[in-house]
Image (cartoon, rainbow, N blue to C red):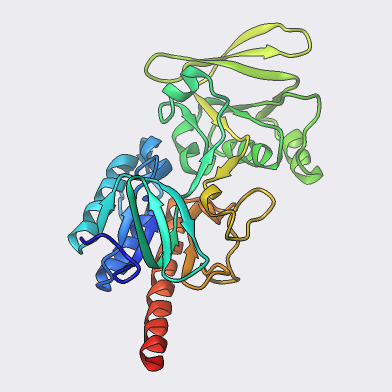
Length: 320
């Protein structure tokens, strides 16, 4: 593919290669728009650190997260999508076509689809990172099913932590909720659900200081930040619920975000306030954060980008 220039811009440039980015690439490549996809720092997105995926339609036996992403990419390449391993460094939305820089490449895009996703916050413990996908997860909805009749813990004290702890009781025999303070930050109704659930035990003033296990989680080491007492707790699942960080930083100068950094799109649309710029997947979705909803919004972004581009080029043709 030729380098994009202001005289010869790329029709569609997609930043991100999770379910949203791949789906946008699939639809735009099938529309002969020759999308250029920059895969980002984590090609394949969060699913690449997920082992078994059992809730994506079409795979009755389940599928490994990395394999699902590889198959999505191969499907897009079959229709002519071009992938590059670079990440976006900067973009200029002052004039159209839009100039961008990603790695060593600088070019121009007629339409931009932002699918850079969000990154779960982790504590940064060495074993916590090492055992991601092997007992450590940041998504109870995704992975809770695998912990039927097992003991697990949730780290966090807000609404997300309370909600995930409550959800996990559908499967787990016991759920420890590790709270750093002596009270929950969660809303009153979520607190009530936690306190009324016999399967949940709240460990107050408690921090996780290590994850135990060689090839899979076998327990955690905790510390009471009031007494400094340490203790080991046997369990098989660790769920982090201390928040997500949307990967929206390169676009914050140009696009509206909410107070936590998620890109804002128009109601019932993936369109941003900049013409020809669309956002899909977890970079603009702080509610669902599922592979299937990300893929759906990637489809929306592709269709909207195709229609916008057709209208824009028609207007330019009429003006010439």
